[in-house]
Amino acid sequence: MPTTLEDRRIGCILGAALADAAAQPVHWNYDASKLNAIWDNHSTMEFIDPSQNPYYRLPTGRQSCYGDQAYVVLKSLVECRGVETDKMAASFYDFFGPNSEYENDENNRYLPKSGVQKTYPIEGPWRQASLKSFLSNYAAARIPPGDEQDKQMDGVTKVAPVVAMYAGRPEMLQKVEEVARLTQNNDTAVGFCLAAARILEKIVLTGCEPLQAVEQVLADLSQRDRPNSHPMDDELLDILQNVLDFRGKAHFDVTTRIFKND
Image 1 (cartoon, rainbow, N blue to C red):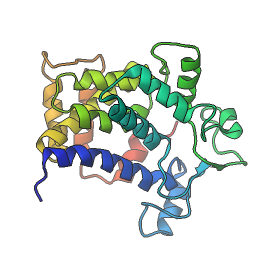
Image 2: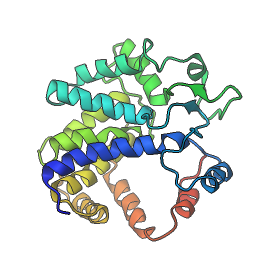
Image 3: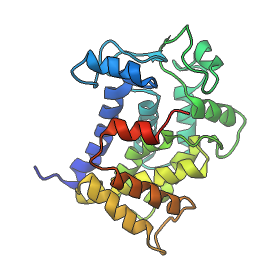
Image 4: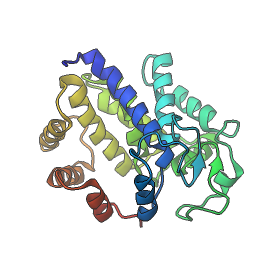
């Protein structure tokens, strides 16, 4: 059924929220054998109940820490009628800060790559590395308050509301970067956010298939005069081409070969 531009703006927000909630009960299962065992015992991996999450325990249907970040971005965009970084940063601090449901002693003691502890899963949501760094930097009045070392995909998960509002406008990529740097002030992380935003914008504006959007973004990134060029663009060209090269192959085979948990 044909969709309107408004349908696609709303759809990219709802789709991101739905996908996050669907995956939350199996989030952060890094042991492939355990993940396969979960798969063997369920007809689908979406909305598994009870949760099989090894780190934190939330009711099925709740957002993860990534979906919650997208919610904070969306709420701030609506309240401010656009990106207001100071107000959005304050909203992040209120939502994820020391007086929020995210405050948890076990979570606070977690060290990166230390794995699942005997006391896990904790009850309640999990505050991950970039948010911890953001909270510390925000309290110290650092501008921007984002983590300068974190290169993970956190920023990509909160791109949808920004693209939904700014798609088709010349400042769209600038606004995505401003939002990304609030919690991840790292060029690699920002580069991936911008690539994701370019792809999503193609889908929102034209209704094209995701594969077509990736191909169009590859062409755009090859142009010398492209808007909002970024130091990561050449590397992203190669990465996106790899994505196309792997199409048709089994998802599990590709992820275990390329995205190893080091």
